[in-house]
Length: 117
Image (cartoon, rainbow, N blue to C red; front, side, top):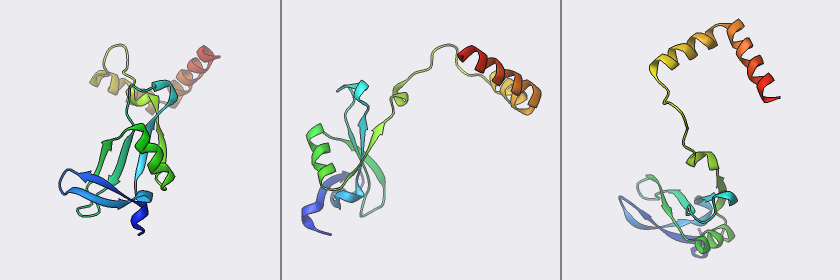
């Protein structure tokens, strides 16, 4: 490893460690999320192998990417919260019955397809 491509990260167990930038993944928010969500660095500790993450400033994200870190866009769906009533055990039983019955499943898929057209 080249010392020029190493970055310092903090493991919750081991403290500060040095790791190659190519072994770091960046999770960046989608453009629509704006600056309300900070980018994250995801890595495995080189000492104890604990998978962990830490938030970083945007400037750090750019520098890490230039050093070889792989960036992944964080899907907006991660922050979505479902509306309506929570999914219950009864819903689960109904769902199981629906997907176990090919005729009922085909009818449900057809109905959804017609509604979205």
